[in-house]
Image (tube, one colour):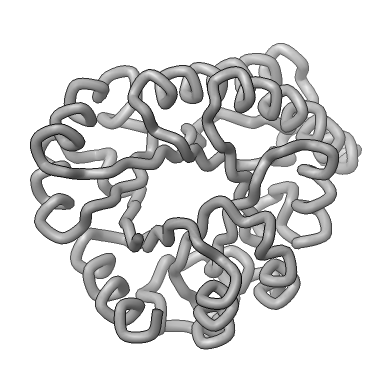
Length: 251
């Protein structure tokens, strides 16, 4: 199923956005941020599911949540925040949650491998929480140039090694790092997919055919080997609808 997500949505009251999204999509990946913090929109999600026939996934919060923090109290707080989202997702019968790996902040610039090590530690703890709540976690590859861990396929798959965590393949992010082909080689681990495009320099979230990422290669691989949902990550709802129409012609 093709769904939609956009950071811009969480600035609009949930019920208003729900009505707009449901006119075009049956699946919405809700970003637990802003006006859409999962604990605050539980009733809206139930209404969307029970009255509008909507299905939901969740993207864990990003703002100030850093599972790669080298400052242990903040790392623990970040893992706890994700654990809370997993618990709420279980309550709402939402089965897929996408999580960002760690960022390199502050003193971590003096020892970047430590931020990766902390990310790996956190993912092991999140793996246990995923099993506890019976919610699948997909760890997303990050774009280059933002001081993030797991911008390459090698780093991402190394980070989840030894866990049952899945991967969220983000085509636009991979394109900024020249990693589309490398990421696709790990398709068996995909539990979620984000599609958007860019010129290869920064994370523009363009329409799926507007950029240098090889959409034909991505679609071919997904058609052959992936059976999960595809989320169009767009700047707004209209461009999300346009991307879905393009995808429907080729999938």
